[in-house]
Length: 167
Image (cartoon, rainbow, N blue to C red; front, side, top):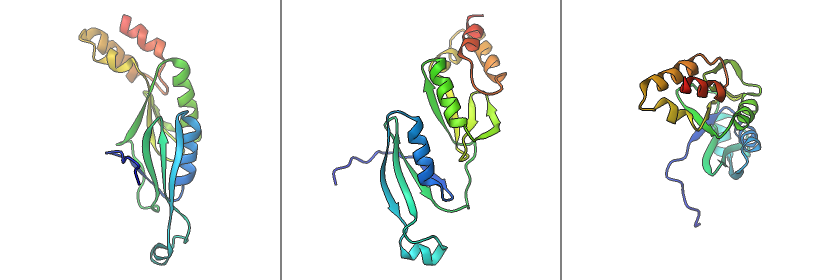
């Protein structure tokens, strides 16, 4: 047992779609894989009615970041209070992640580069240059970028942000 444990690992609570969701996410991100899968035993079945042998957790990695997906039941739902940021180098990459992650998701939750996927998980699909632009010491530049960003109805258009930045 010489697997190095990641210090902080996001744990995503699903009703019963943990394995399906993990497979969906690894199909989108290139440097990704499924790891260990654990299953419910007889005790959980007797207490909560979850089938013995059903998937309990799925460990997976997206771009080297480890996650755990848990089939915990319908008690808890995802909210926008937590989201995952996907930093994109160019518009083509941004469009790719937006298209893939928003497929089957909540169209009403798409604003300012944020989306909610078909499992209810929130993602921010942003250009890598965004944080530099909004933190520019020239407050006029950063304010123009923020104004353009806040007017975005769904996915971010990098060209629009750059135009706002440059004035």
